[in-house]
Image (cartoon, rainbow, N blue to C red; front, side, top):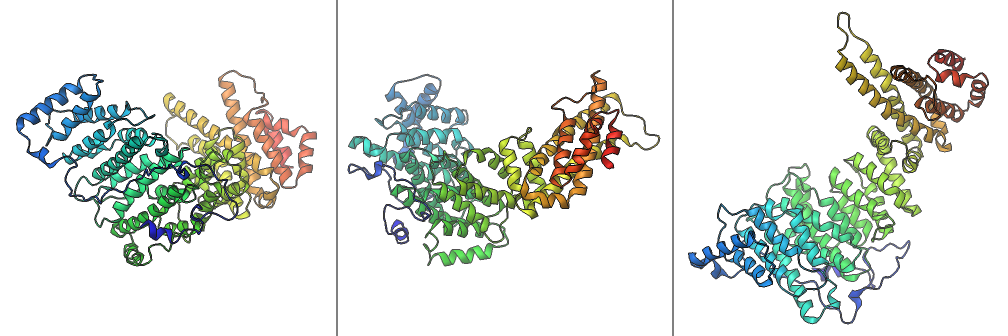
Length: 602
């Protein structure tokens, strides 16, 4: 299969597939190119769901006395703190001699003990078969129909991967140690397949758990760790791509992230990694079509036709990063699109080991997919807020702006609400995002409209609470306290809307839109100032405080935003008039607020 993929690879064998021509990432010195390089990736024999356990078949025919002795040893070992290497191996071997587990044996404790043995192995060298034996024991337990939720605990899988992936590169090992490393990786492959295919049909839920623990290793800063992780993923997906039946599952939630991570790896400088990633994507594509053709979706027949066509055009889609993104993106659902998009955003960070240009192209192309649908918008906004400050490449920031504008136009209410909650003080990142959102007229109108609605909400809610039909008794004290708490929370939340508007009104790019929406913005801000003055006065009266706005009070800031709005809309003279007449100070005090409103209305 790899030879087939190589036909579509660039002519330069050291150049990753789909490398972008806009810039060339610096070459890194790689241990893979060493003359003493040893083969680290193994090619295990094809695994069959009904294949016998890797332990000797004669183990199923042992006398009851020997199995009883094994059980006794296992029970004794579980309650001890044994450190002797030989006794640890005997414990693991005893598991392999069992034909079944008795009901009284603590299965979770047994698996935890195996995890503990793996965890105690040094990652500085590989000197024994402890890891192999532990994984063989896990395979044996899977044949005993141990609950898959016990055997696929993320903590157990993470321990297995960390203990083996973190070993030194193969070329730094002695020949015997390197051979043992290859065998250990082969055993890991077989263990993963045994877990996925515990029953006659592969379990997609188990596959999802394994991939979720595996995928973060594709972003490791160590080349040999990424190589080992991508090798396991490709091996798993080759097996899954050859299967015709799966256990039913409502969704395969890791598909978008899987494709995103492998796409980034296609631009690696290390030849073995990008070749494996390309092959892995081909297997993922076959698996995706098989999976979606069996799911109750409207396009099931279309997926089945594509599956048939792909048998004759298996490599047509791996020519470059853009092609990969558009082909997969066409068949992603809303959640898968969003996962792919989030992988691309993380890949653009300055600290990412992946090529930022490749990640940018991924983001660009996924946004170009015809009929693109996105879900989990709040998660995307939060991710952009979290990572924007660590992305300095101008072209990458430009793509983020494009993505944010798209989200803001389609999902303005959700975007505005999420961004307001990201930073209570409207930090520099949030301010930059508000500027991005209002850099295009059609999106600016929708964003300003949502902010206007939020400014009106506290006053509207207070009006609803104050109106009671005739004959309805006043609220109890406890109810009044709850209402006041609710109003306070609303006031704090919607104060963020004025901070967002303050940042937006200072931008030259959106002045035309501000002028168009000036009446709504003006009235909403004035109502907001009135509500804030009344709420502040009520709060200060309750706590016997003086009714004087502090330099950082919500009232003073709301008035400040009104000044900026008037200037942005071209009413600088009115701002000066109010200042000369002392109107701004009148507006901020509860006892003179009505005079300030009258002066502003003039």
